[in-house]
Amino acid sequence: MRARFEDRLVAGIQEAVEVEDKITSMPGRRLIAVYPGSFDPLTNGHLDLIERGSRLADELIVAVLKNASKHPLFAVEERLEMIREAASGIANVTADTFDGLLVDYAAKRGANMILRGIRAISDYETELQMALINRRMRPETETVFLMAREEFSFISSRMIKEIITLGGDVAHFVPETVLRRLQAKLISEK
Ligand code: PNS
Image (tube, rainbow, N blue to C red):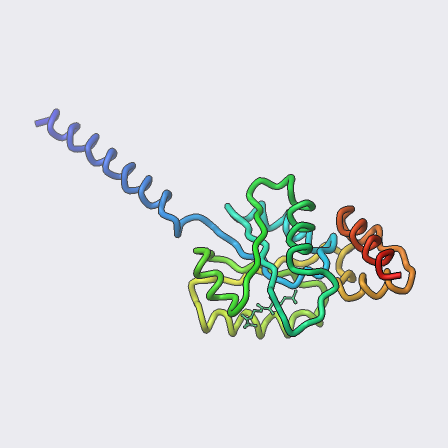
């Protein structure tokens, strides 16, 4: 009688372990985050968010919006290359492009998290609107915000483009690869 009880106990534990293995190996259990944006170009603020986001998620996909209606400084392919170069040391980060709705892209990639950064209170309103719209369209994908580090809270891609075009120094604000490409672009346009 006692042996039968122990056998049943062992079998029960084995079953529990198998169930747990099944659950933890289910694709939906992994935290896959999409960090979307224009990244024209990538800044140190973006890179900081990528580094911190990569520690929260199992997989972080930096997704560059292909937006034909804007007039970008860098082509989508160049932006991808810069992200890949700057984030090459982070194993769980990849870069990709998307068009259409962000939530559709997140669904296609099996992502359960959208990562966005907030710098100042002025970012909040737009970000809140986007997060609420995205949640209404796809509640399974949670938007998670990280506050920009103080030293990056005033940097934006738009400002960087303006400063470098007007002859200013942006070396402190962008990764090395971006700086080289910005300088090359300016030289080739002179
Ligand atoms: O770096 P940005 O330009 O602030 O990024 C904005 C971005 C790409 C996150 C946003 O425009 C976006 O998600 N566009 C995809 C279209 C979409 O899903 N729109 C509905 C929700 S706002």
